Length: 283
Ligand code: CAA
Image 1 (tube, rainbow, N blue to C red):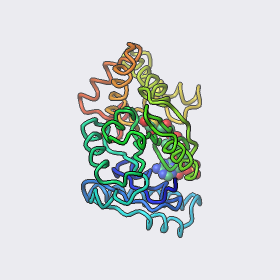
Image 2: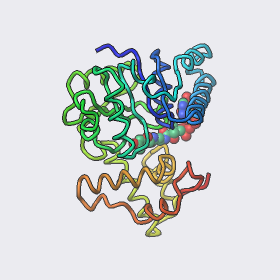
Image 3: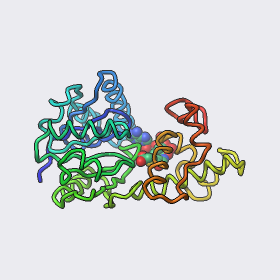
Image 4: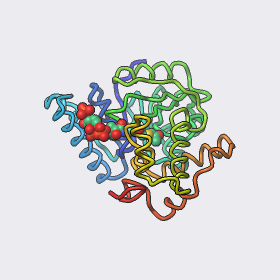
């Protein structure tokens, strides 16, 4: 299958990073969001990240300009997706919103279009059922910051076809990423391993084992992690961490995945990490 035209739905942190990487690798991308301001913010982030790459001599000024030129922002859902060979969905991690998007995609896209979700925890099999085109639905799970992180988890839903899987795997390699194939179980591989570690670090804070700074220092200096688990939780968003722990707990049914009560309290109090200005650290 020849994938040429790509639509990315959602211009937030993940969506703009995904659009950036596809455009940098020569693809025309239409970046779809519901408001002009969300699109402007997304494009501005791409511009800043491109100029960071130019400063580091990863990219020439001309390539950065061409990359930006390949991205068309639009608030028109139908016009944004109707010609796409591949749609990458990166909307909020909310079942109702995702369900609505997959119903609309089934109406608005070509029957052959592949629908890939960047979800970090929602079942690909369930998204496939929403689209009524489950063979064409797959997970393409990128990592933040998308232009930097090499991994893409390719998540095969229960009914994802071999054609869809092979096309998406090859595409991930084409854009310079290292794809890893995983089956559709809660948290896939990345978050099934990462989130319990973050959750355990939060238990250490709650029980007063050490300060957040010291817990992070243990993992940075002792285990060579680039960021400590609490700084990473703030970077990902504490609400996202909680929702992934809830998915693991509910989906696997083992109490070893119970979310730490301190995590729940912080989210309830509005401390969501970097995006709210306060989490385990202040920003
Ligand atoms: N776009 C482009 N380049 C970027 C960038 C961006 N948004 N952010 C950072 N960079 C580049 C920098 O220019 C720099 O490039 P050089 O190596 O060429 O100098 C490099 O990345 C490192 O950045 P910095 O020097 O600014 O800072 P750093 O060394 O502290 O690295 C980091 C920052 C890359 C974020 C690093 O701390 C890191 O790898 N942290 C862990 C990130 C991680 O775990 N991400 C996964 C989160 S989980 C997720 O996304 C999925 C989920 O389902 C929850």
